[in-house]
Amino acid sequence: MIRFDRRKTGSSLRHGVVTVMVLVVLILLGGLLTQLVRRTVTEHRQSRRELHQRQAILLADAGVLRAETKRLQDPAYSGEVWTPDMTSVNSRNTAEVNISRDGDQWLVVASYPHNMEFPVRVTRKKGTAQ
Image (cartoon, rainbow, N blue to C red; front, side, top):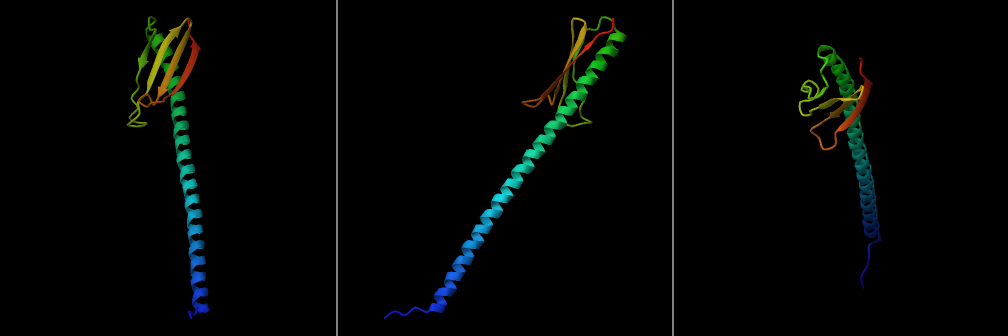
């Protein structure tokens, strides 16, 4: 006849339950950590995109000022593709500002970062002084 020691069986059962509970807690913590990392990455991308947006706005405004200044210096000035030096802002990203005349208005399109697949583009139109 086989005899079971109830104390041993109960102890093994408790160890098994504890092991399962530890695994469940680890899985839950892993899920929480995964969500935290995803959220952090998403927020980082969003803040970088907002920074690019602000930089493109500043470049477009600078392009309008550049067009007005160049026009005062040279009445025949009709526009250009301006690539400002961006190394003081970011050594990897480039910018391009396309300045042109559209009738009696300046049309300025700033693209930043121009070397990326999906740059931010901002357009400004401003009437020219006669």
